[in-house]
Length: 382
Image 1 (cartoon, helix red, strand yellow):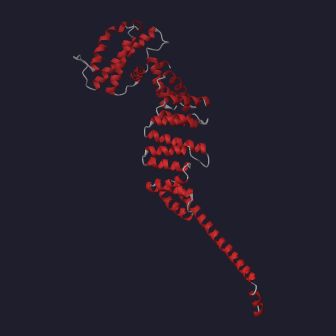
Image 2: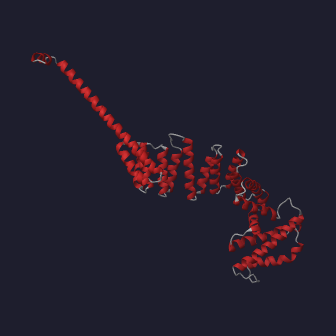
Image 3: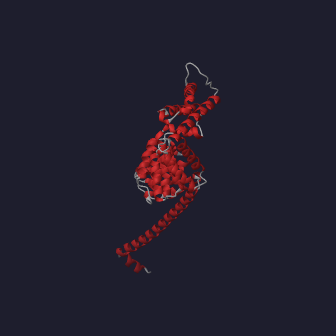
C-alpha cells in the first residue's frame, strides 16, 4: 500500500473505527470461546471427581470420598449436590461440626429440600440430639423431593420410626405408624414392615389389624399369618391366635417359633376350666389337674430356692400358699365346679403361679398356660 493511499484511509475515521470494532468483536468471541471451553472442562472434571467420590461413598468408604467431593466443589462452586454429598461424607466420617456448617448453609438457602432435612435429621440422630433429629426428620417427610416423593417420604418416615424405637419413644412411634398405616400401598411387603414395627412399638392391636389387611390381599401369606397369631397371642386372644398359628404352620412347617407358640395357645385352651363350651365333668377334671400342677410347681420352686414350706407362724410367701393348698387338698376328690369353689381354687392356683414366677423365673408347659390364663381369663375364648 503506497503512502498516498494510506493517507486517504486515515482521513476516513469511520473505516478505522469499523476495522477496530471488527477486530475487537472477533477477539471477544475467541476469548469467550476459550473461556467457555475452559469452564466446560472444569465442569467435566468436577463431574468425574463427584462420580468417583459417589462410588467410594456407596462402597462404604466416605473417607476416600471426601477428597473427591472437595475437589469437585472447587471446580464447580455452589453446586448443591456436590455440597450436600460433601456434608454427608463429613458426617459419616465423624466430622459433624463441619458437616453441620455445610448443611445449615444449604438449609438456609433451601429450607424445604427433603434431602437436606434428611441429612440434618441423620446428623442430629448420630449426635443423639433427639428433639432436633425428630424436627428435621419431620421436615424431610413433608419436604420437597425431586423424584419418587411418596416413596422417599415413606422411607424417611420409616427411618424416623426406627430412630424412635431405638430410644423407646413408643407413643411417638405409634403415632407415626398410625398416620402412615392409613395411606399404605397394597404391597404386602410394605404392610408387613409396618405391622412388624407396630409390634415393636407395643401396639399389637393395630399390628393385628394390619396383618388382617394383608391376609385380605393375600390369604396364604405365611408371614402375615404368623404375625397375626403373634399379635393375637400378645393381646390374650388365644383362640384367634391358635387359628392363625395353625394356618401359619401349615403354610410354613419350618417356622419353629410359630409351632412353639401354637403349642402354648393349644395348651391354654386344653387346661382352662373357665371355657364355656366344656361339660361339668371336663371342667372338674381341669380344675383338679390345675390344682395338682400348681402344688407341684410350688414344691419344685421352694426346693430350688431352699425355702422351707413347713408350717410357720406367721406364714407368708410360699409357705402361706402351701398352707392354703394343704387345707384344700383333702377336699379335692369332692371338688366340683358347681359347688361355687371354682374361683376360690383357681385364685389360689393363679397366685401360686404368679409368686413362683417372681421367685423362680418364667414357667413352661402347663404352668405357663395357667399363668397366661391368670392374666386374662376371658382371653381364651377370643
